[in-house]
Length: 211
Image (tube, rainbow, N blue to C red; front, side):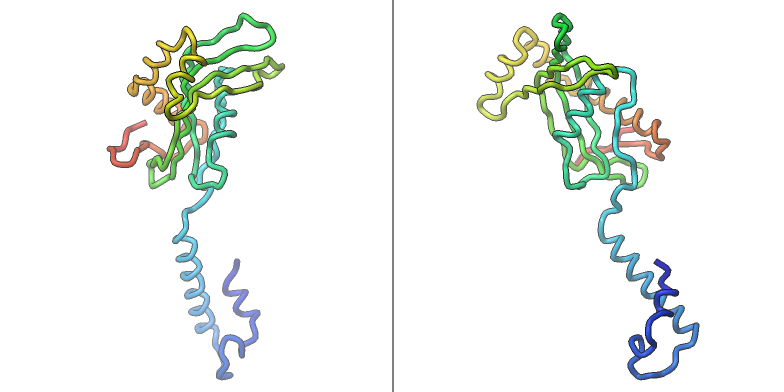
């Protein structure tokens, strides 16, 4: 909004009930005050949408389908973060059935705010389980996702879903170094794809990590 133009268009008595004439210098001072006030209001809230949303743009059609699904299902719906980025760690894939492809893995969604050149993680969660995918002309489409249950049912549910891959799942789940490598690589690809001036990411209470 052009604040100077807006103020000039207001009845002088509305701005100055005393009836004293305003000169242009006074009007510009009022415009400056209004602009600073507006700037303060916007600065008090987080600058939304200052970076693009994440979209997988790689060649792995399975990772693309899984990434799109976990973001659509588990990323915040109320824009509480600047960007949500998944971590897809596929443990096993079964192509034996022509009607569907089975994909077991550990899947995460991390939510970030951009602060300077750093993506600061504000929240996140793990969603391990089994995807059933259907082949399409463009890649894969998710038919269903069976997620491991929470709480006291976690181990029983994980054993049922992962079956013979349960041991591999436990190893992947415990391998935080591997997860961070995938996470950093995914962030780096996102930053490069959008030519962002981001050099680090950071978890609360931890030192920032270079991308």
